[in-house]
Every structure is written in C-alpha cells, then in structure tokens.
Length: 286
Picture (cartoon, rainbow, N blue to C red):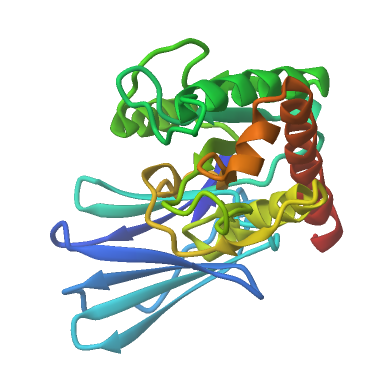
C-alpha cells in the first residue's frame, strides 16, 4: 500500500491474472475487491506512509477460491477508483479527495446526450432531445466556468459520438465529476412527467441526490433518484458521475417549459447549486 501526489495504490501479487470484481460501500466508505481463484498465502501488508486516502487495508479468505481485499477510506465521499493488472500484480488505484473543494479548482465534465444521427426523444413540436441537451450543456458549461471551474465537454456542436467513445475520452481526461444531461420520454404525453437523476454505484449517490433535490425546486414532479442504473456514462468507477434526466420532453407542459431559454438557464443554475451542495457536503462529512 503506497501513494503518490494524486492516488493511493494497493498491489496484490498473484501467480496469474485471476478474475475479480470490485464494489463500493458507505458508512464507512470502503472499496472491496474479491479475487476469484486466489487462496491466502500471506500474513502481512506492507503499508507506506505515502498513502493519503486509505485509512486501513485488510484481507480475508471468504471461501475457497474467494480472496477479499477491503480498503477503508479516510473521507466519506468516494472520489473514484480503478482496478487493473500490471503483469500478474492486481493494482487498486484510488483517487485522493481534491485538496480544494471549490468549483474553481475542479475539472467538471459535461456530457450533452445524443447528437448527430442519434436524435434521442422527440417532442410534440418536433424538437429533438439532442438539440435541447446541447443547449442545456452549453449553458451549464458557461455557468460552471463563471464559477471558475475548468469544463470539458463531449460535444459543443451537432455531432455524433458513440457512448464508448465518450467513456474512453473521459477516462483519458480524468475529470473530478461528470454530469450527463438528458431529457426523458414516455408514450403518455399528459400523465407522465417530472425530473429524475441516476447513479450506478452507491459511493456516487450523493452527487445525483443533491442535484435532484435542487431540480425539484423548479416545481417539477418527482420521478425519483434511481440507483444501480445501467447507463454507460454511469459505468466508470474512476470519478463521481450523475445522469440528469431534466424533465419529460414527451410531456406537453414540460416541453413548453424547456423550449424557453430562460427556463433552461433556471435549470442549469439548479444543477450548479446541486454540485455546490455536493462539494459542501464533502467538506462537512470529513
């Protein structure tokens, strides 16, 4: 167990590249990695004081062929981790919490959903989801930059990007947070409406939840904060991420709202406030 200026590492030497799975736990915040086919044959953990985010590391033989590594973090918020092989050594790479939890010191990724040949949902007026997500994302970029954040984007024009391309781009760019902006759709244009946010991993839930609470201040109905959501932009474990389904483009009343640039700006301002709430929550939970 050791660290550098941005990450901590736990390295497990194995006789071969074995399958594994990792998951996050909270209260307290932990990363757990199960290695399948491994049997305990060690009795020590070398811990270097260069590690800054790891509070403690332990291991346990859960069953025959299931070796569990449990890593407790110093901070309540998960800021991202990655598991990979370097030769036959399994490496768990853990991102440090940023030294400053101010937007002006962070890199925020803004993903405008759909684009190009991928139109997304369509409203009664014929407006495409891809057009509204781009408008919202450009306004969100401007609002975050006004707070001093560095913003990286999937697209700033009418272009197509496959979701796999988006994931690879952000894995290379390594933002501190990712926000993916979409609009929802239903076959019922009258009764189904509301705002919602989504996360996949429990350690990233606070970001989506706090944005969701701010979005509800716009008077939109609750459609829920949904976890374990299998959306590709929610799949990376390297950084906290949230999918924001702003409202239902298929709902006649909500479509009218989102076509108004002033309402788009109100929505963007609520997302920024949600991100600020998330960062403040990180400060208070340390």
